[in-house]
Image 1 (cartoon, rainbow, N blue to C red):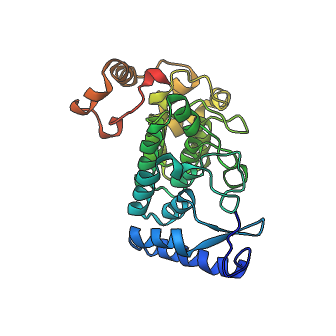
Image 2 (cartoon, rainbow, N blue to C red; image 1 turned 90 degrees about the horizontal axis):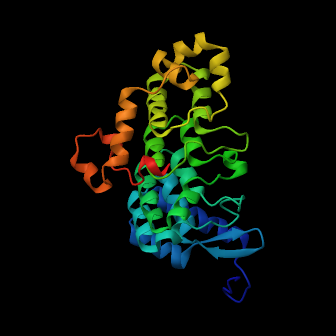
Image 3 (cartoon, one colour; image 1 turned 120 degrees about the vertical axis):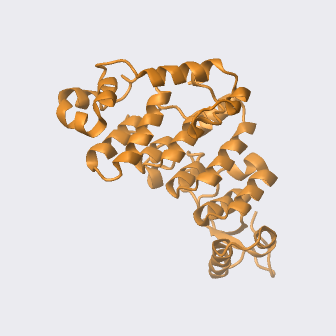
Amino acid sequence: MPLDIGGFGYKSKKVCQKSSFAFYQAVRDLLPVWALEDMRKMEVFHWEDDRRACAYTPSEALLYALVHDHQPYARYLLNRYSVGALEMPSRSFCCCQSSNTPHLAMAVRYNRTNILKMILDSAKSFSEKERRNYVNSQSCVHAEGGKTALHIACDLVRPECVMLLLGSAACPYVTDQQGDTPLDSLLRQVHQSSAGARTKHVCLGYLILFMRELFRFQMRRELRENPRPWRALLGEQAFQWLSGSAPPSLFVLATRTLMTSVPGEQLDSLPLPDFLKPLDFRLRDQ
């Protein structure tokens, strides 16, 4: 509803712009949570295209917290409003209203791994189907090209984000609008440049751990038709598995067996690598 302030049906656009920038600055300056919430609820407004002055929702405030890595504020919003903080913001913040994961996409793009963990923890309150749909939803077509959060993590080579998403029901076989899987996105990054090769291989290892059907990606034909450069880029073992020339390594098979046979609550007591703990969704659910 339009706000009736000072006898007018709405605040002026100029006043809203100043008000909105003041809130942006306050979050950027990492003001205390109580101060930010006082501002959000009583003092600041943003301008909508339909000539309305609107107060910031928890979802919109969370986007600001993500941009500026204000972790206490993000934690408060997610704890206080739960999934309400993950609702779609208005068109002023996300023009693609068909996407319902702007927070996931932004957390990955800005590499806000701590806030990403908070978001994924909050998503546990969804039903299992809702969680999977949420984590695997395509992002804004205009801002992110309709990619999922896992695609973005592979495009930007963010290993921790890749592992957090895979461990929280992100599907390694989900495709974007071009039909590419996250593995396709990562292989294109590997081919594009040798910079950051070690980090790219870490991301690749995480994907391989969660993939049982490696034939389901578009770049496989490229690997088979041009084996020499790909052997050099990927290493012999990874190349053979990805191209279908050899089965997965004993480590991968043993890890999969372990993850599908040990109850989740017992994993923390095992001497597993840190990146495997905790996994809230077992590999058998992939």
